[in-house]
Each structure stands twice: as structure tokens, then as C-alpha cells.
Image 1: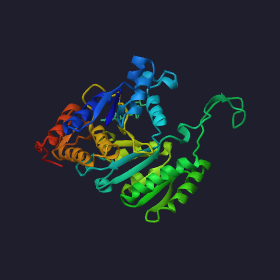
Image 2: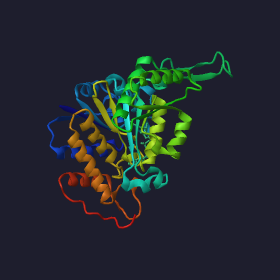
Image 3: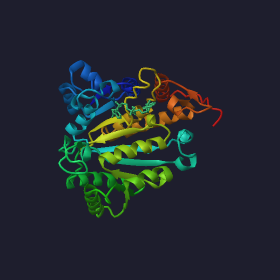
Image 4: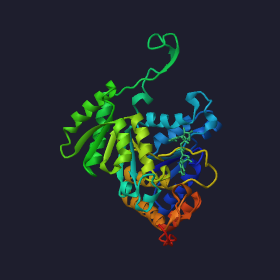
Length: 367
Ligand code: NAD
């Protein structure tokens, strides 16, 4: 088995380094190969997703990805911007199903922006369709308006679209995931305004007929955004389109204390996947040993479980993360009084030590 390691930009290199150390401790039998992606690849090869990186990603059994992007590339033409690398990988590898678990660790209920009783025990799975919707729909561009409120004015436009097979396959993924959890799917749409999402709702309802053991509810995206901060524990599996999923999954991330805690998996139809933290390259803290590496370490655990069929090794990583949190170690984004603030590297050291069987001495005295 082969894992492609694509650290990317900003904190990507720092957090992926810690995840690789964690994988190394497990002494598993796979090869790894590292390649440039994003801004780093643009600097070296003039393109954010060079042919060689794409070829490696295609050949590998799984991909561990850091993050891409930096504000300094904002003036580049869109096709050359770092973020195009992740869009290109999703498209070329057919990674249509994005899993973003939002799990609130008991030790971190106080780091959430919501009251502890609202998030304690929170365990939501957001499944976002990843290769369709307005992010990929054509045509798109700028032109002179021929109608609308200001004919003759310069305007920009995008196209929102979903085909039946695209909706069917993500709906199947959601119902099957719900079967292994709380047996409830909330399909989020905007069917009251958008034709695309009336169609989405109709097709999800049709697919649901094959899953009578799973409950289905439909919810408009504006209400879903509200319910996520009002009563998030009422959700089990949330399935939605690319754009709504992008926004709602970041909102859900904050419920758990920090986006630095949230892993994600993007899978193709054969469960080959790209695994990355839910956050970006955080240029504001890059290179300062401040980033939380746990989302990336937990993404590596998801990779072992989903793509490499090593669930016991995944469990070991997740237990090690729980152990370091229980011992009171915190990076700055999840720090609270009475816990010990550590940097990226020290957090990685602690997870590695826990995996090696060392007891992490609890240092927390207050909660
Ligand atoms: P971001 O997720 O990088 O950062 C948002 C905030 O969260 C920042 O304050 C950052 O410091 C903090 N943060 C993020 N990850 C953290 C971690 N592990 N530990 C501690 N704090 C963390 O989002 P942004 O600032 O909007 O975007 C920065 C760059 O990342 C942009 O170029 C954007 O396009 C890119 N981006 C890339 C991806 C990806 O590679 N998949 C995803 C989102 C954004």
C-alpha cells in the first residue's frame, strides 16, 4: 500500500509532519511518498497541481493532505491559485463524498462557543457532496448583462446544477452511514427558492424508500444554520450539497471548540480517499509552532479506517488523542485556564508518547 503525503502550504507542513510521526510509530507496512501541492508547487513548478503530484495521488491508495493557500497568491489568475489544487484533486479522483465528523470531546466542552450542556456528547456527521453544485457548474464568468435590474452593466454569474446520479450516490452514502450510527438523516436544501434543490429533495426522498430503517427529515439551509447553534445534538447525519456543506461544516466545527480538532475524509466510489483537516493553511499562525495538529492526526486515523482497512490502528490513534486531552495538554486554539499550553511539536510528541505506551501525566487541576 502507498500513501501520498501532500503537506501543502502554511501550517500544512507543520501539522502533516506530526501526523507522519504518529503513523511511523504504528510501524505499519506501507510506503509513503511526499510531493508538493498548492502554493509550494506553484513556486517550484509554476502550477498548484503539477502532473507529477496528480500522478502520485492517482497511483496511491490514500492521500494525506495538509492545506493549501496564502493571501500572497490572491492576485494570481484563478487557475494558478493554490486552492485549485484541492479542487483539481477532488475532480480528477472523483472524490464526491466528504465526511466531516463534528465530535465534541468531553475534555473540550468548555472550549466551545456554545454552553457546555448544548455540546456535551455532540456527535454529528456532515456529509457534503464535493464534486458538483455551483462550485463546478458551467457556464460561469463575467459578461455584460442583457437583462435583470441593470441591462448593459458588467455582471458575474455561476451555475448551480445537480444531476440525478450525483444526488442518488451521495444520498446512498448518507443513508448507509446513518445505518451505522443514529439512523437519522437530515437533508439540507433550499427547495423553497432553488430549482436545483427542489430536485435534490425529490431525489433524496426517492432514495430513502430503500432505507426504511433510517429516518429522513428535510430542512432548509437557513433553518439548519440556526438549529446547529440552537440544538446541535438533534442532528445525526446531515447530507447536503457542496456550497451549503462548505458553510455548515465550518459552523459545526466551531461547536466542537476549534476547527483545529476536525478531521475530514473525501472518498470516491471505492473508498479511496483524500484525508485532510477541515481547516485551511492558517497563514496568520504559520511557521510559529502554534497550529493544532490534532485534526490532521485524526485525519490520518480516518485514513487507516476508511481506505487502508486498519480500524484497530485508527482506534489506537484516537485513544492517544483522548489521552493527551485528558492529561490537560492544549494548543493555543483550545487552551483554557488550568490546562497546559503546548506547541504543534509538543502536541505531536505527546500523541507519539501515548502511542508508545507512556503515561501522559495529567497536569490539569482546575476545570
Ligand atoms: P483557515 O482555516 O486557514 O483559518 C481560519 C482561522 O482558524 C485562522 O484564525 C487560523 O489561525 C485558525 N486555524 C486554522 N487551523 C488551525 C489549527 N490547526 N490550529 C489553530 N488554529 C487554526 O481559513 P482562512 O484564514 O479563511 O484561509 C487561509 C487560507 O487557507 C486561504 O488561502 C484559503 O483559501 C485556504 N484554505 C484552504 C483549504 C484547504 O486546503 N482545503 C480550506 C480552507 C481554506
